[in-house]
Amino acid sequence: MKDAVIVVSGGMDSVTMLHEYRDEIGLAITFDYGSTQNAREREYAVMHCKRLGIRHLVIPLEFMHKYFKSSLLGSADDIPEGDYDDANMKSTVVPFRNGIMLAIACGIAESNGLKRVMIANHGGDHAIYPDCRPEFVDAMSAAMRNGTYEHVEVYAPYTNLTKAEIARHGAALGLDYSETYSCYKGGEKHCGKCGTCRERRQALEEAGISDPTEYETTMQ
Amino acid sequence: MKDAVIVVSGGMDSVTMLHEYRDEIGLAITFDYGSTQNAREREYAVMHCKRLGIRHLVIPLEFMHKYFKSSLLGSADDIPEGDYDDANMKSTVVPFRNGIMLAIACGIAESNGLKRVMIANHGGDHAIYPDCRPEFVDAMSAAMRNGTYEHVEVYAPYTNLTKAEIARHGAALGLDYSETYSCYKGGEKHCGKCGTCRERRQALEEAGISDPTEYETTMQ
Image (cartoon, rainbow over all chains, first blue to last red; front, side):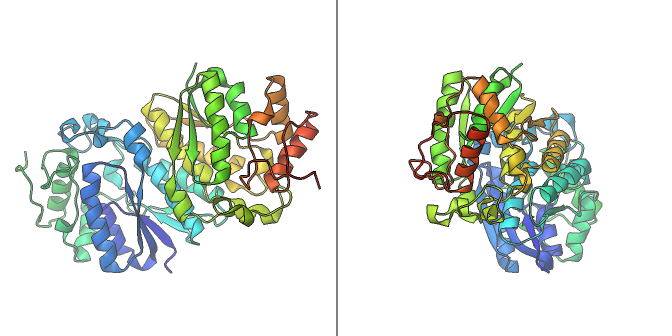
């Protein structure tokens, strides 16, 4: 039954989820919060939804770029380099972004008779991003259930998977990860040095998948 | 300490809260979701924040008007008449609106070093609006606490008050309720017949306050 809305960015995780759960998804939503990374990812979100025949909305959130504090909303030079779970990655947090995306998707779900909102947060996000952790997901799901007539729920089946495990799901589905985008710097090629590029490379390597990504630099 | 963000519409309840808690409020936010009611209320939100010297942001949420199902987002003719807690008022629900406003205000609070988000839901809202009930507020507060570094919380001190009790707070503060707007139909004068006009009249009467509102019709 296609009773779910999915929040899809166009990165590895949400594109994998989109394909893995395609038979349960009635609507996909991509949020545009004004970063170049976000714009590059979005092209892949559009491509995959089109290919799978899934209705897709792009929702601009101008206020985020205007009023939120995050290096991810600045220029490429603001993005720290290092591992995805390093403490200096904290500057890339967009405060309560998942809460905001889930809340809006919940309202659209309730407006369209859909019962679940899917999001592709995973285990590797927990160190730096509080709104990716299981205790956030559980409380947000309770807020949505209690705050809607149809008792809409969050469905986040990757919450305790590693990114390498997600990549294995994708490989089993025959996904080509060159059709996804990760880099926080938002360049045409992946930089290879920011936290999310390093995480991407490590996940594909750990999953034993030949990495199709063109990086600007070799692994350090 | 001014450590709170307040969500203020310009209606009776949020304007009362704005004045009552002015010493705790560092920032006020009004959301513009595209209804005429919302536009009329907003003028009062602007006026009261200016008068109190509270920094005020207006945030447009175009997606709500575009993708959400609610008679409140349609024309005046779509608005049902009757008591505020009648079952037919259900069509005025904007799905998960409080969840969305709280989530965005939470991200802005975290971006500005503020710790609490205030909202003026009250006891009379519980019958029809699920995202005004205590169990929603508690779960949303847990989601925000778990999903932010600064453990931002919801502060909703009117949750179990009646609207008449709120009006008594306002009267004690010397508020003039003609400087607030309620009507769902969004006309220049309050219609006097929609659920929120009836609720407004009853609350002022019950609180023993002479009603300064100009209505199009007398009470039925």
